[in-house]
Image (cartoon, rainbow, N blue to C red):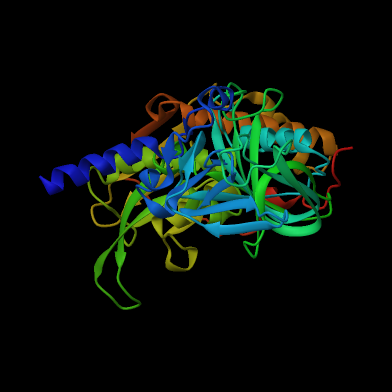
Length: 433
């Protein structure tokens, strides 16, 4: 019975992860006298993954939860801002999400107000394949040039802390570092975002001494700003590989691991359409070479087209290396990869079907490789590639790749080493203006 209940909780949690949930709403809470509708401790199902915000008690302050840590902020009788932890705090409405893994980005956009921040978050999310019609949480870690926050105050004289005519207490800071927790939604105005906004923001300072609802924010374009978005389930789960390796430098074949697209991204340096093409192609090939079993990275060799994206995927997922005669590149071969099991010499090629990749990407890509693309056209090329990346994630790999077995494949290494590394040729190009 205990095992069944635990399994049910885990299954429920996996369904809720990164999904934005709410209890009560901004519009309705006043009709009930701001009566609390939820106790925070009832939401701490997986303590370290809970993120949320809402008013505290009977509009007695603000609640912000980051990494499962519930902070309450309120103004004392002298108007001084007080911040403390309270896992038993209650709220008249609350918006929250469970997020186990975040993906980190860096932006240098000039943020002059909440509207410009909303636009920057939407643009980043769309580029990363998020459907912005679906609500999502986000986090921002940076130093703010200007920040104005407030904590709400009681509306009724029978609530401790009530002051006639005071609905909130405001605080203004300059050059303050900390974290902003936000929720983005295009259909939740009046529920957990204001009627003229798609975002709801709370701030907590780096030293956890200041916290509240964000009224105004300005971030300099010169300031490096870290933005965290939930790791997309389609990226984290859809493209993954179970592998087996040796357990130390001279060890036995016992070390099983799981590799995701995020691991490949860290190795390669960025997420792009070429990396996703390579990963999905390898996934299709490995279902033939290693069906229903871990991929033995000590037992593979691979031939790849010379693309930086494709070769990085090839090396990372197969363990192939030129110095050990298990990897080489070849521009003349058909398809993306030729992969061979060393033990039984079973060999497959994998190709992207014709018509899947938009022709404009290759056309502009060739111009970019010659360093002849303007800054603005380079941005357009990135948009095209980002759109294609999303299409790849949303498509059935069986319909966009072709895997063929190659009988009696002859391993014939090509040792040419002067291929152009195309993903760095425009690294010094100025921004589009």
